[in-house]
Length: 157
Image (cartoon, rainbow, N blue to C red; front, top):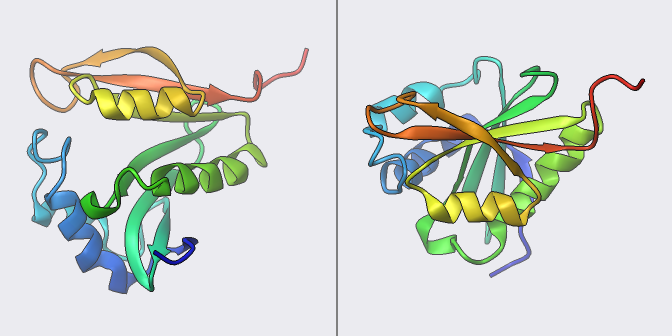
């Protein structure tokens, strides 16, 4: 595998990213379909910034970031192609986002499904703390867990 790089999301990434998302959990369990992803990934990204991690000239993952959320930014989506999971690409992409976010604000938030222990462990390894559950947010009987990584309070004093 060639050294990974990160670049902005482009319209031509939509098909590959849609296939990644449609074929992975927690999205299948949450009931998302390829049609849902096609709508979300249409350019422009409707108030989001998109970042693609690329290896060997092909998209291997995507992060969608929404600015200005609870005195910080919100990582709305992070996906790595199933064939590239466990290779460090998720951490590589997350590190890139954190450098950008923490240059402008002190907080980065993300939600993970309570039934997704791998994602919860991933974010814990990267310094995120669980804030609390949001029950029945996406599907009945499940909670999204709000997590935060911070460099300090929004106000100094």
